[in-house]
Length: 594
Image 1 (tube, rainbow, N blue to C red):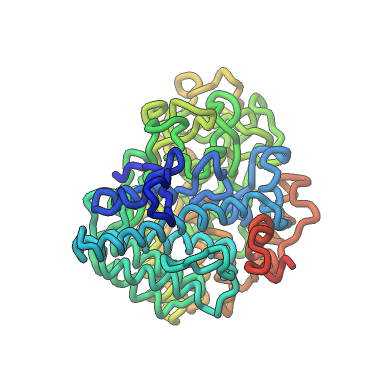
Image 2 (image 1 turned 135 degrees about the vertical axis):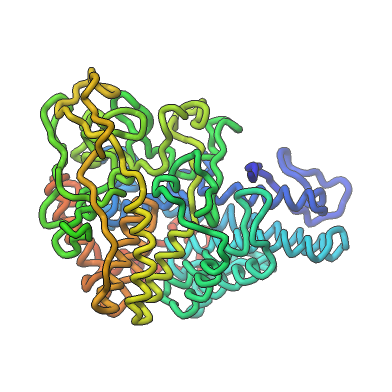
């Protein structure tokens, strides 16, 4: 495992022996050997989680729960309207350039990540030239550094688009580099770094958490897919598939359990280490607010709650297939406004079984914590909706304090890795490439691989037999209140038999990506790229989908989205005003925000 170490390196322009290093900094020349370079690399890996509290905060999260999830139809900011107010504007698509969340993402990507990667590359190059390390050793170090640089750029491009400065190890003064680039320049820069990394890195690493050739190829494929460059992405996906190195793990939930970190499906995981430093910030990843806040569990702070729209998306028909056109016409039963001690019966509608691993709702067992008691467990339903914070990153009760933090007030921080790139991504991206190539039969093969895993996975078990859930019920009520021999809900999923057209195949692929990757920070970015397809997203534009979501959401949260609409001008975040002020005449604001 890569142990996270934070390093500060100071460069001196003077050789005067009287020059003194600032307290807490380390002279560059101590890193001019393999051990020193690896320390610098580890310091760069330390940044990938998007957390460097308290220099930057949750806007830099690698999991993109704000920009990729809360800004979409997958989730709400959660919590209550008066807490972390800047995220209200992200969810409502009214972000201003002074919003500190995008500013955190910019500072993380360039001021921390890219800066560390470039300085590390310079030390690698100088050490190789001095003959202290071999060319083969230099390639291994440089491959990892360039992978990390590409990753920081990829993340920045997701949020800010192409209005970002291209900074290399040869850039003498980053403050004088414009963020206005020729078409394709940023994507090409990312892909070039990843192509180099793939050419020199091994297929496996002795330490988990380090980049490999397959991680570089998978990230390059995802970068290319942002621009719908299917013909360039698909060969990379084929190489990963044909390598035989990765498989889908049998259980869907094993992509989100601490006990199954770094499993056979994982291509690149961001490692979460707890209780190694105060507040366990090496595991925070910018999601330290996103834990159950209410009674019984009582952590902080109730953010990132799945939406009613997402819950409705898990409806299936009698054939076990999604209800593409009608899923959001009516809402599945929710307990909004219903006190926990009052009667409430969960829906008996047929549901895709992945739903209750993705959304925690009243009347369903919540991992090993107990029966979700509904309103008492939610911070404020009228603002954040009726569902608990997205449960995928959370831990089991039996793991508390051994695999979760024992210090700090963000008490939900735990050792659950973030599967940044995994084989299920590759499979569904391959399916998308086949649909785009007018090969519905090929798309069918890959979509059904994911659906077959979902069908064969063990569903959430434990049918709750009571419908009133006062505090005395916690955790599991009396004997007989939960029938552990039955699934928790009425689950059904079946494979597709065929697709009648490429458009039908693409719609199924898009839907599958939503269900499989929900609340993982993908949805907004996927809607944005699919909006450029001829048939867009099942025949609807991104704006139509999000505005329909906002209107229907008033049925659950009566006022939060009232009067707010999405337009194409909201597809990217503004360049932070503080950065524009620091680099006047150098950086330009995105045209939508001028």
